[in-house]
Image (tube, rainbow, N blue to C red; front, side, top):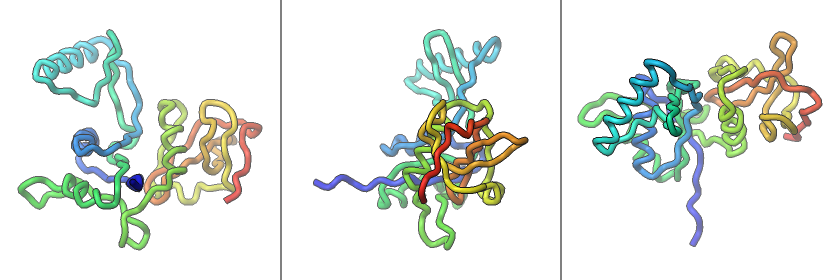
Length: 208
């Protein structure tokens, strides 16, 4: 039996509701990704989160904004508050669109990104998604995020791949910021992330 073809798509979600959308899509059995930072909670913030988590557990519920590791509690904070990625079959997209509509009203909670011609849903290449996830999974230190309109003029030179270090395997373009070489990894037409300094000896040219 042939394996179903799954592709990555990006959703724009209004009203800072990416975690609500994550829960909806996961409930549909779909894989999702939100670029988040894990922030360790301390003091009163920790106590409030612990009480909140305990109250939900008593009801058999969870709040995916929080991650509990033993006595430690982390809060997931999106790098880009309005974007979530979903991996799905094309036939699933009408159901995803349905999740973006407020039940019983015409209110729209967001949309699925389309290509430049605005006729078809924009499929994100696995290579772009892989590099984006690799970079954003390392935490927020040294990272900068740009909209598509902002980053289109930042590409400099040819495409490169990182060969060593925490971003090993990521591909993108070099951008100079205050004389430092940084890697720009973009999800074309949607968002880009710029890393901290990359030593030139750890970069190799990728043939496009």
